Image (cartoon, rainbow, N blue to C red):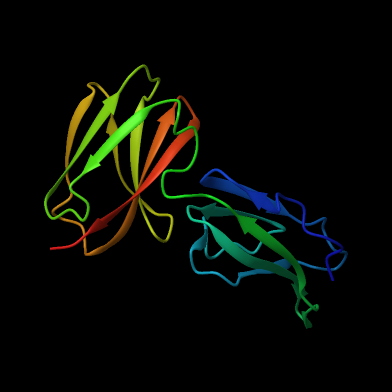
Amino acid sequence: MPDSIIGLDKINVSGKYAYSVNPVGGADQYRWGISNSMFVFEDETNTSNNTVLYVALSGDAILSVAAGNQCGYSADKSMQILSSVSIADSYKDAFNVKIYPNPVQDNVYIDIEGENAIDEITLIDIYGKTMGRLPVSDSHLQWDVSALANGIYFLQFKAGKEIIGSYKIIRHK
């Protein structure tokens, strides 16, 4: 059985978080699990001793891992993760963003006010899959989301490689 899971147990900014366990002697694969479907694995087929979770909302979850080989799997080692990420989560005072309409049918409008360093906006579905990227070239943007299925999506704001904010939108025809 893995000795302990290495990674953050308290999260307050949406994004991707790495978790790992020290290799277990005789193990050639690992089985990762998460109890909250709003916490999404970057690679669902991963069998290595490390994994990446995408966390976009607040809540809690139990992350578990078991070591395995041709004889079967060990008992799970678990870790509780607490997320305090909000809909408009991090650095909300660093820039002011208006997103409308929400729910959106065809086009979502994004107005970025004040001084900001936003380079790119990424559209992510609830499973953590990137659905599109929009370079920020103006403070007033329009994004056509009419091809998306109904559901919950996240607009993730980046300055360089750093995620500085995330907002939830609902696509509803």
